[in-house]
Image (cartoon, rainbow, N blue to C red; front, side, top):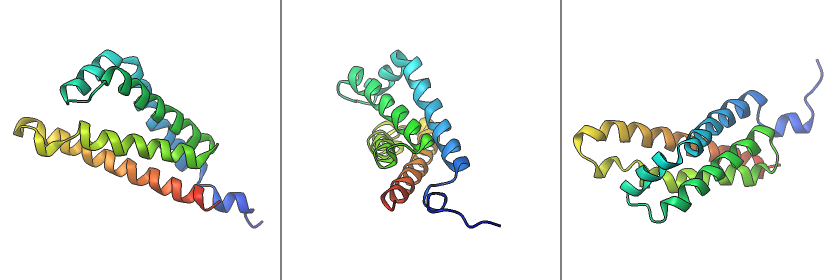
Length: 130
């Protein structure tokens, strides 16, 4: 059996990158194909200039997901994804500020985003070590 070369040891597995990146890319594309709905939701949450920020944030997520999937500019890509989740998660999924009917759904979304934020930070750390 041959020993893995340095790039195999430093680059996260293709499967991990593909799973993470494809899920994020689908989320970004869903946002971009339903911009009116996403903008309306963001406006309802009090996001200023939602008509500009929603497409920009969705583009940030899409670009970051592609970069992680291909492992091209991985620090920038992971930072883009982390920035998306750092900004979006507490603003859009503020489970502490909604009524009881919406609390469980918002808490679930908040925790899912928190998990993805953590994964983005892990990819960033891995890319920083290269």
